[in-house]
Amino acid sequence: MRHHARRPWTFYALAMLMTLFLLFLYGPMLVIYILSFQGPEGGVTFPMVGTSTFWFEEILRPGQMANIPAAFGRSILLASLVSLLTVLISVAAGMGFRRRFPGSGLIFYLAVASLVMPSLLVGFGIGLGFQLFGWQPGLFTSALAAQLTWTLPFGLFAMFAVFNRFNRAYEEAATDLGASAWQRLRHVTLPILLPGILGVAMGSFTLSYDEYARTTLVAGNRNTLPLEIYALISSATSPTLFAIGTVTTAVSFLVIGTTLALVIRLQRRRAAALR
Image 1 (cartoon, rainbow, N blue to C red):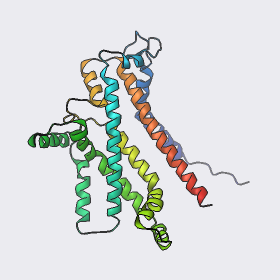
Image 2: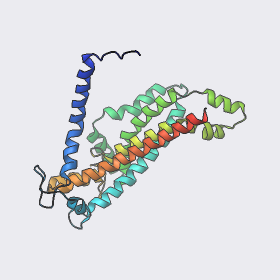
Image 3: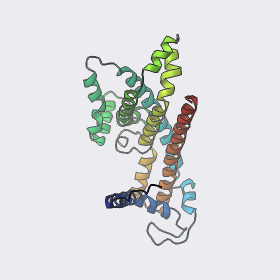
Image 4: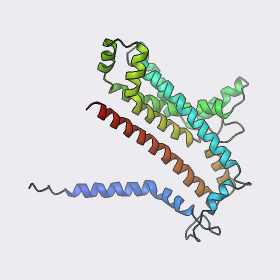
């Protein structure tokens, strides 16, 4: 039997560096998750005073935290709408950019320019535009527009990468078999692109769900969950905030896990069909 080559010392050094990076990345989050299970007499620091789910129950208690469930519902609804629009526009743009046309480069750079613009200034500019035209800012008007300036560039990058790996031979084969343009899109192009589309939907949903800077000046009179949390931090601090963070993180991981499960299932079905 062949003996496995001994790993060089650089492997262990890089593994240690990666471990330290993960601790740096997830350590603060882990502290918040642990402190969210403080006892009723506990505070926002260690040591913990007992363990309980008291602070999770406080999220739903009428009073100071009464707006959290409503803000959570608004954030989910807004993120779902942003995700849907990002997917539709990104897929349409990816289809349009499959062939070069005059000014395509300029249009592309203009579309992604908002990534390098300060987030607060983007929101401020949208708010001024609504004020100029006498429009009332709101979650599903000005805030939606502000968040799309954040999610669309990422969606475009992802879909362009997917289309660059797309093999047009499948579409040509469908055309040779008599498929119409709509049948080719529905039964060939979109199913092949579906894992990438799900990735764009997941990414835009999580970006919108956690967005604060671009939304704070254009949300109108109804807060999203990040705005509500920031308002609570400014007024009072308690383990309830940690419980909110734990719940929202669980929702984010649920969305990511569900999307990855769908992608894996699609890949397995595709591999089984090609056997």
